[in-house]
Length: 371
Picture 1 (cartoon, rainbow, N blue to C red):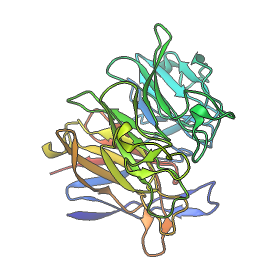
Picture 2: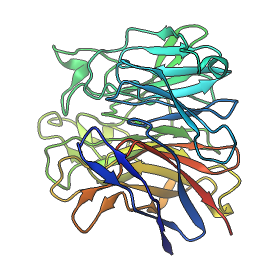
Picture 3: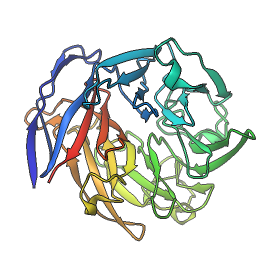
């Protein structure tokens, strides 16, 4: 059963240039959603420091923020700008007291960020030389259970073969890379990945799962967006030859066989634009939510009737998605097909509640459960 919750909020957004009022979001019975922070410009991936500060990347805004809840009431008291004029710093992750931030072609490290966030912290570049193309160049980043830093590099186009194209010709495009920062070693964790802006590791199998955005201009209903599972390093997931495991690309799929590529774990609707994903493993939600996969469907940009604009939840059994249903809805006003918000990424808090960023409304929400 879904219940409606009113969230009173009015913020000014740079694009589009009118005030957006977030009035109604829906969550399953027993759950509540509230505003944790507002005026976090273009809020994308989030990371949690040891001191409870939430660090937030952005995409087009070029900003890096620290969101501070001073009194522990789960409402931000201060939003501090740590850096500006960065090149699409969408991704952030935290490890051993340091904050790592992705730009298009490099990864920064802010050492001892918990002690320096309020005093114009300086960073050092720990990974450089990634492709510079901005098209699908923004990226989420995270450290895996293996200690390596995972860094996706999207295709520099809507549809092309960037590994065999004279203009690009770079094997890093359309991949998920991983880096051992101690040795500098780089490996391809997955290839044939058009544009992944969200990934996580299954809590039991420790396998990498990732979202992938399907190509455009094949109509309203093709190809599907995808959820994928990596069973071995270097697997090829089909792009640009096959989409969704069964849609042969009319230009690049000629003389290719679908059987040569790894099938998606689950196909989503076309153009829903899945971004952040997260396996819930906190203690607050009911037991049946343990291990379920949250998916932020950011929403379509050119579909005749909009798709996505919601947070979904997948139930996975023995590596198979057995259910896929709404968890947070209401980011799209169905009466006039107008956008209220666009969910991006998740961040679990120590109490088991969950933060959800929204780069359209410049907001971070907090989801809680009470019996």
